[in-house]
Length: 288
Image (cartoon, rainbow, N blue to C red; front, side, top):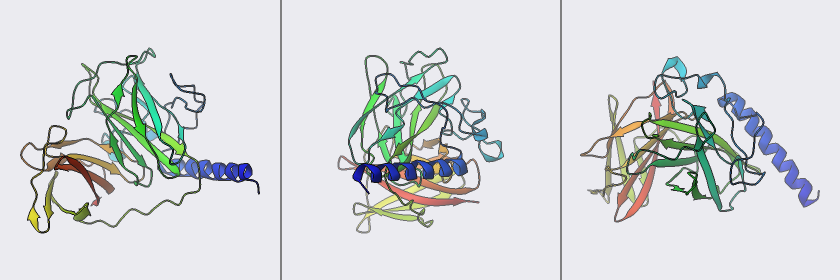
């Protein structure tokens, strides 16, 4: 088989797998896509319509999760706002990932409140919850945002824009990005209250809705530096639909208050800073 033909087969296989996975997890957007501002025809605008789980919830118009609890990150459009972003990238190729938030009138939203020391947080992760990245885009003069982004392996990815529009409510919008090529999804690691990263040991203790982390190295406690206005930053994603949990950091410890919207398995990504470097420890947590 010729190389172009082989690439086409791989592309069809990936998109087919992503479509089936999307149907099981809440849906890959299959509606027609219009060109996003500032991008070529291969980078298209993501449209709303990822299934009934995206009915408006009680917090900022976010998607409704199992049991009626509000779960952000399930919709590309919510509360009169919409995320316009590329829908494809090439594996391992660095890209200037440009996107924007638009209002009901189609105009680009430009004003955002500062939260956790930034006006917008951008998360990218593959749908099997691998390849996590937390980035801080730069806003351009036209109100759009851009960030260097490399998705190293093929697969179906989810990107999240976490922000609060000035005068509005905290919002998380998300859309899928497909990276062509053969891929095998990885199983979620077994639940554990301990993780090791970059020579540091991180222990998790849960008390009610509080998640508390203790960081040590060679058996000695480690004092963390402030990161994003707190002792650490935590992103929690639900396995399956990748519902995005808003968590609230404590001021005096690496601890967070998190209200899980349903039973299930969650992946926790804790980021902490030591000696000027940010480290990311990941945990699998089961909520009964």
